Length: 369
Ligand code: FES
Ligand SMILES: [Fe+2]
Image (cartoon, rainbow, N blue to C red; front, side, top):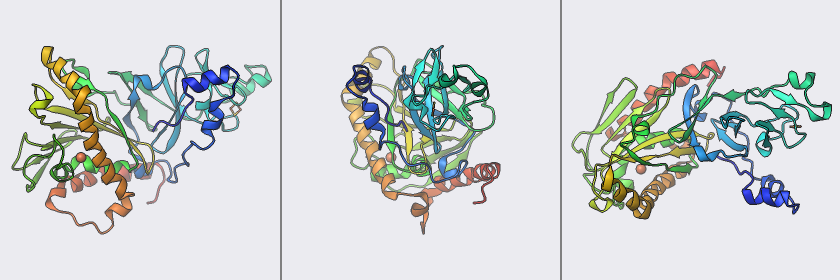
């Protein structure tokens, strides 16, 4: 979740001496701190790669970003490399994201203490700059970041990062792509359960152009894979959202296809990857980059149709998911007295797959429940 940051206009007004919009803007914009302890499963699985946003999320100014319940700051250093660290100045707790990047270092706005790309304090101006206090001060939490395929990725966790291995669609140029990001006021587990629950499509999305087709009665099969599991409808393929692959590895994501109507132009089905980045217990940023393996004239037609018409349709469908999940409110409330059907097998499978991960995480963070 990206948190309000000064706009170009606000910066300009500040430097033109007409007052800082930064001041008025931030007085009520900060979300309450997460009420769950670090490592709680409802805040996400730690020691994983997360998609933070497209590269243009971070320009010359620091950006506040909440992930897995932590308030973080993103900024670009001297080499334009993105850094991600806790958004709290070690001096007296001001938000570093309100500061500036000066000479490739992050400068806190409050008293202008500066920090380098490792989080080391390099200057305490009121004590002459470089000094013993600066040398002994460090931003305590920093996370590894990589920029690849036009996106910023961060390893959120305590252990060292594993190699970032992107899905083939993101590195193979035969796929034409559009990034899409939506913000849901729902816990990430409810969002992930929605993505493995393929039998919601012919009901919730019954009136949509792309997901309204096919039979409403079917059984689903779940098959384990090396990296997670796959879900298929037993009696229908290539009609609707009929399968999904769930990757639960060090970069978790889902992969699915949506058959497109002729009005979407010639070409194979739409491929969607889904990356969930939990902001906290109640909010999730969902990245749904779209892909279609088309080239030449087909690619041109698809890209212009997507911009002109299809994007709106997709957003309409995603809004239906958003309405459902936001109405369910909390994981506890949603699961209280639930009655599961055969079509919920993938949801059960997902919960079982995550149980040992959560148990390990709880132990590592000293959480008893
Ligand atoms: S609180 Fe950051 S420099 Fe004082
Ligand atoms: Fe949906």
